[in-house]
Image 1: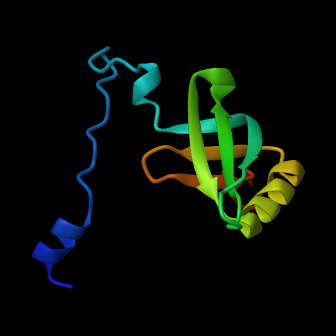
Image 2 (image 1 turned 180 degrees about the horizontal axis):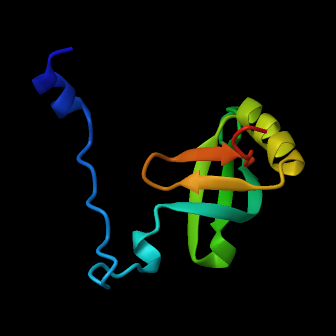
Length: 106
């Protein structure tokens, strides 16, 4: 890939905050948050269609919430993983769940 193409494909990097108090961190500026609670919901669809599963994520004790639409199979897998994983994070921008934290070298 040519350097110009590579620069177009990569999102711009954010500049580091000035340690002298330049950039203020707010609730909206935090983009990766810990999942502290979750709730699955199912709604019936009309006309003999499959139902609609949603997964509501409560992040950082309610500082942020996200609702995801998931398939029946994904709901089953996610329920197992969320039940069996002690620490789960959610990247708001990329809409990615990250399961567990492992210390490097472990």
